[in-house]
Length: 306
Ligand SMILES: Nc1ncnc2c1ncn2[C@@H]1O[C@H](COP(=O)(O)OP(=O)(O)OP(=O)(O)O)[C@@H](O)[C@H]1O
Ligand SMILES: [Mg+2]
Image (cartoon, rainbow, N blue to C red; front, top):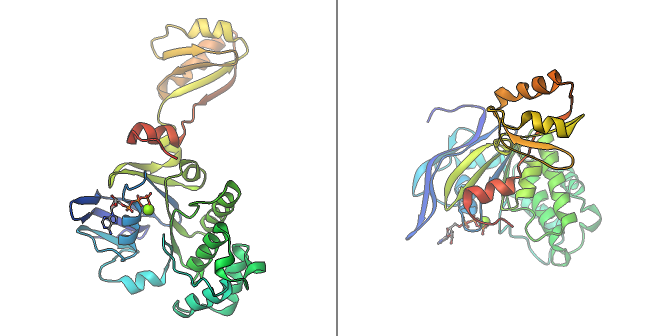
């Protein structure tokens, strides 16, 4: 496979079967350098299995997966040196403290200095609790320690499996802020989640999967703007509504107290301002309705998200 250096992860027709179950089905995705990529799908849709194949923990049935342009099945050690991961089962020792756990993982990661351990503890806000046993940590603290561990080797690629699982809103926000911070540091982040809200807030691009297949992938902003529903406010809404009703270049017009709403192709949107201005009515606001990922997800997967 010829490599585009801007791609950190590239899978082609990646498939994994467990007996009769096809967990991942001809999956082709691209993760670009420096982006926060959301991998979104309902429970059991193949997110963790895909992540396992990216990390070389699970052997594909067919298809291929390249990280940094290298085939995972052949160049795993080189790939893992540049990658940090938070999996569903990062194994910490319960009786060791957070600090001791990190020291243990630092020994099996290349080039981690004692200062780096302090740094990652500070980053996830665990410095004050670093000497307490892992077993005494709350779920949020355990997840944060997992993230600290993934960041020990200062990896350029970070892959996180549902990092906010089981956390309360404040804990989720903390993790989200950390993920955003990684994005600002030009790291590439691959984030598995079934939480749309989370993906919508932190991710640049997203792939939505169902039953192991990609249903759609693209920039979050573009996916959300695809229905051309325009909302306008004007200096005279009654008159504007009457003027626009029946125009052949728009459909499904309706109004409420504040605004007028209709569907229109972007290339005709200028006609709205032109017609109104000719009649001495002026736009005070004009914007395309932003869909939420939640609506899109429901529409595409037919399943409710959590
Ligand atoms: N080791 C395994 N043996 C058999 N079946 C498996 C195995 N691992 C995963 N599966 C099956 O593959 C499918 C995808 O599972 P996977 O864990 O990848 O989904 P997921 O999207 O991560 O789900 P969740 O949101 O619940 O974490 C499921 O039907 C699951 O039961
Ligand atoms: Mg999973």
